[in-house]
Length: 212
Image 1 (cartoon, one colour):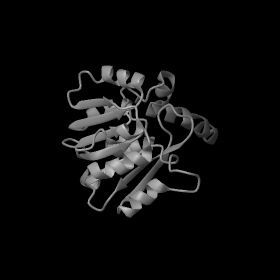
Image 2: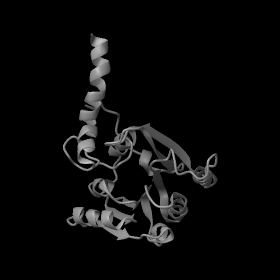
Image 3: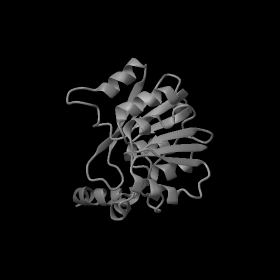
Image 4: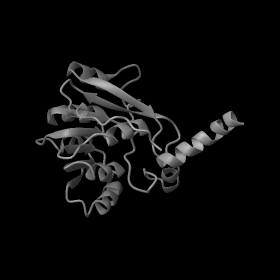
């Protein structure tokens, strides 16, 4: 009975404890308290939640719930969005966030190059032409910074080719893949973290703790 109970209750417990159930009903990425979560995989969210981003700057290619999540953790958030309706929704949500800028850029090249001229500690690629965004991100990443690529199990290029991975490797980056479920999503996905030897994100990490 215990084995059967574990098999049946574990998925229910996971859905409730992570906010997956709440996210599914609301069609938004939310935690158990109804607060915004990024639409990354839960393993990636868990890791990032243990990092101190205070004083750091974040660039997002693709705005949304993650913009609100980063606004609570980083000193400055600069987001670029392609969808006009989603852009308006994010603007309303961040009206009280003084550390956030959101820009609308609907053309692919403009989307990737809008932030050019600035530098960032963390760059998140979750929209647009991902290859163009990676190329732009490499010009804007500060020393010791990291690049986060969401939905990294796809969007690599033509079947059998991996232009984004190849580019990162040529530039001396290493990679960690965080596979798992994401808020309100049926199938598992992957969020990948790209970094060099000097990445600050791994300094002073807190010890792992038992999560509810």
